[in-house]
Length: 118
Length: 114
Image (tube, rainbow over all chains, first blue to last red; front, top):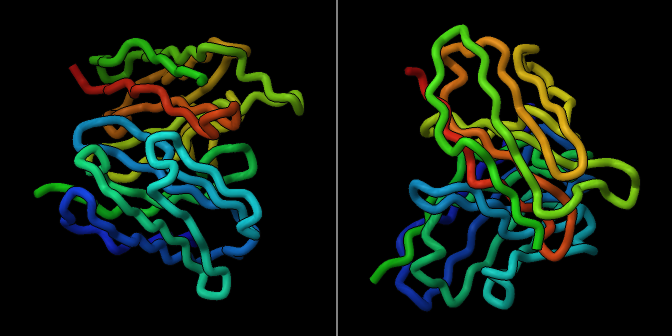
């Protein structure tokens, strides 16, 4: 069974930093691309970042480019999102999602809440 | 950027009746490889999203056959033939991988029971 478990969320002041982690199990992590998707309170879904299995391809949404960095450690079956210069509008539940074969997300974690507030 | 729109944004339905959600993109989603990567997700209250349909019309494993997807180019539809109580929640369409945003979600359609 595919399992994705996010951690690292919490309360942070504007301008601060936070590092999210996603522990993957139940599949061969290294061959799958992964993404981070977020959802602001009461709002819709927004794709944040993508990383290929080998880390050779990395992409970001314009809203986080230059502030967020995605990475992965295939030996640890883990995905990360380093978030710097956080803004109020970054407040959201952050999901890690496994990229399926069809430019989609076939598995999702339960999410971790990031609150940016003074 | 590709902009995804959905209608209606709110859909009250009667149990056992059919429901239909429209998803439109600002440009054709036909990709250079000949495929169209339009997906549908369902998010129940308090839960993570779940993939329902991929590549326009392919149901995910375990998705009841009362769900069907169709469309091409810029116009797509998700249909529920007979709504059940477990179908409540928000439905999102999503496109990939048309640049500059690799993935773009629609705003979501909230389905609830009348």
